[in-house]
Amino acid sequence: MIKTIIVGTDGSDTAAQAVVQAGELAEKLDAQLVIVSAFEPVSETRLQEERVEAPADVEWAINEREDVDAMLAQISAPLRERGVNVRFAARQGNPADAILDIAEEEHADLIVVGNRGMTGARRFLLGSVPNKISHHAPCSVLIVRTT
Image (cartoon, rainbow, N blue to C red; front, side, top):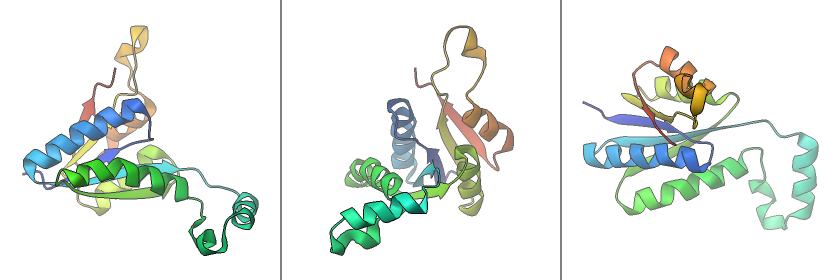
């Protein structure tokens, strides 16, 4: 039985297709959906500059993951409105590692990722994220055709 589904996204249109399919599965199976995204570190200098320009009441919210948290909240909202049990998680670092780490922590039953739009002569090759996940996942993997 599938109780927890992890889906990775970078906010792109192709990744959104994987999120939609994962959301539909979670809804039909009454499973928990965890939407995961990775982010690169932001320099402390840049963060300090942004805090100086921000109103005092929101300075505390400016951090290295605020953009990815905002993206994940926006992606999660329509799923919540449909009644899907959804959460999101942002991790610093490599996207495949972030998805795999959260899948292990959550004892996931399924990971859903997009194929990254490979076409033509490259159609036999997966993108680096789904390739790594397919080889190292602690559970089943669904690779969604996003092209």
